[in-house]
Amino acid sequence: MWAERARTTARTVGEILITLGMVLFLFCAYQLFYTNVVADDAMNSEVAKLHRLWSEPAPRVAGKPKALGPFDTADSKGNTGVAFAILHIPRLGDKPIPVLQGTNLDLLGRGVGHYKDAAMPGQVGNFAVAGHRKTHGEPFRYLDEMKSGDMIVVETKDTWYTYREDRDPYIVEPTDLGVIDPVPNHPGEKPKDKLITLTTCNPWWASTQRMIVSGTLVAEQPRGKGEPPALTVNAPKFQ
Image (cartoon, rainbow, N blue to C red; front, side, top):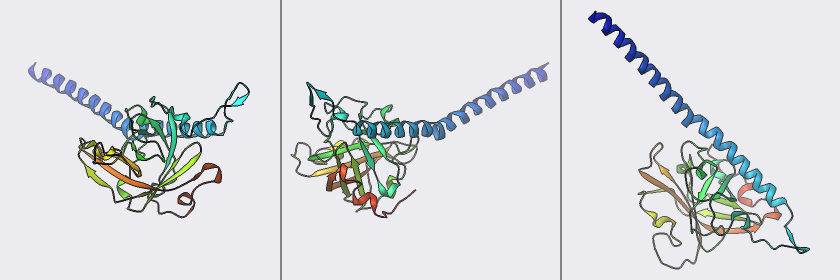
């Protein structure tokens, strides 16, 4: 009798462990692969939607065209969830990355997120964004491969903005929010430069640190003149 109970218990425990193993396997597959598929589709959709929106004629009011600022598609009041720019990083490949207002996890599955109150592209201050390094599209997966001098291009409705990376990627604590200040690590100081800051988690599969890439605006040109040199030359790529 005891032997039979032991066999039944062992068989039950074994079935439970197999089931748990399958659940864990499916969860890992979801995180590793499916979230990337969904996020890639969402990013492509956001980029296509922006290009379509930017190509449409300006709305007319009382028979006259309504003047639109360069970031009107972003909702310049800071409402979250709206894509307003496209990020291009030649070092990391040819994949365009939409930039959305806000940094919550849902938005970071559709692109990279623009920090609240950070400067807009091309403006004096610090245009700061956050993105995933693993899963959910992994736009910043290989951010650690960037080098000082690499170009970072931001495409908006009217303008291409080209930034040059100031230094190799560096690591800070998750609580070090000074890196996204208008003047990084100088709270309250009035900005004079036009900066960009990219942030992501470090290391892979953890968020115990933040990896930072920073740069300074070096060129801008009307979007109607075609892609800037940083995107047309044979820039080094890591893919």
